[in-house]
Amino acid sequence: MNANEQGGAQDAQTAAGDPLSVERVLVPVDGSDESTEAVEYAVAIADRYDAAVSAVYVVGEDVVRGLESGEIDEDDVAENNRAYLETVAEIAAESGVPIDTTIAFGFSTRRKTRHPGSVVLDVAEEVDADFLVIPRESHTDDEPDVLEKAAEYTLLYASQPVLSV
Image 1 (cartoon, helix red, strand yellow):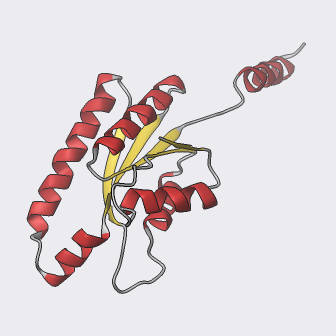
Image 2: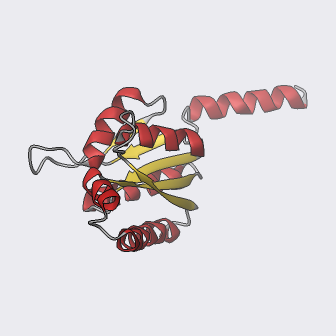
């Protein structure tokens, strides 16, 4: 068997033994306990596959509207989001998993096509994510929040494997 045949045999064995290849896991977050749990799952998956994690803080509709109307201070929102993303980075660091973070508005009062789920899928494409972990928060009232809306959309339209937690 020559070197090319050996490499092909090893690739086939790897594929047969572990059919899922993961290089980047995307996890959308919103600062909730449920999103922190999703980060823990994303880090565990990334650790298992020697992959990296991308976390996107998805800003909800009420906050977006408050920012646009001037009722909510942009610096306060940015500081709260950064503080939470530092916690996310600490979770990844504990397992030695590389992580990058970003913030995205999950809604727009100017673009009807901007939806939390489409934002998650757009970010997945931008970071070349090949696995998604999305929190699916419990219903505490009649109106679903930003990550519930993102989860429903993502589960329907993602081309990557999705773990809903």
